[in-house]
Length: 261
Ligand code: FPP
Image (cartoon, rainbow, N blue to C red; front, side, top):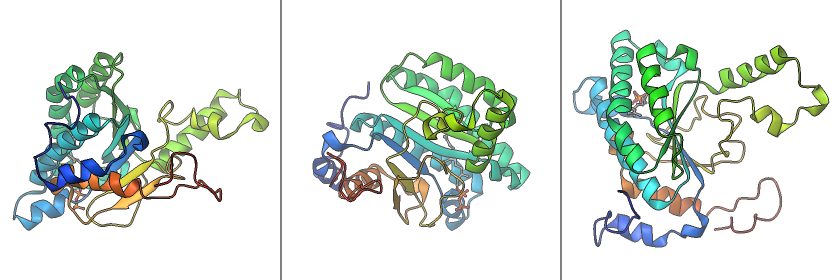
């Protein structure tokens, strides 16, 4: 059972030093990650791209456990975008194979540690076999209340917003004067999730790549040159330490109580 970070971090290491710097009363409630650089990681080693995705799966496991032990409430990982379908067919097929294996094999660990699992994205376009695993795992973990692990699968931010507009128009029940931000957000696939406090992007690219466009309006961005398969506990802890130094004003002139670093 994953308890706290105690006993999980290497004694005397940088990760332990970073963990000691974190104020657990001001953790980011929701951390989102654009996991980038798998292909480059593989290329640098003369390996096929899928090997980078496999190594990236290990980083997924480590980041999940670290966030759960730290006390983060929501972790959202961008695993497959709507644009990823443009990749060579062999990579797409093998990536979905990897995702299916993860859903089948890691479900038990997630459940045993009290994590809730959820998928955001366009479910209709998710391959049927993977979707069956998604539904099984969502059902199995539905009553868990520790951290929610959200996988973005076949996800695109613009598509999500368009779909929300379509559903509002099709339903014909929302009057324009009643449509505010909260009501609109309830039509997005992230309904019920708080907006991310911290968005991590690996591999150094300064882009949001169509991820959670509505939801990251006031999210703190943290970019590291580290490629996703090399992303370790210390990198995650460093992101949280830096997040706690940020001054979050949400357009106001003053920080919100408890949110100034
Ligand atoms: C971006 O790297 C990464 C992806 C498109 C896929 C992310 C998938 C994983 C981390 C592994 C499987 C996920 C889970 C949840 C088990 P890239 O291929 O674009 O890298 P590049 O920019 O260096 O080419």
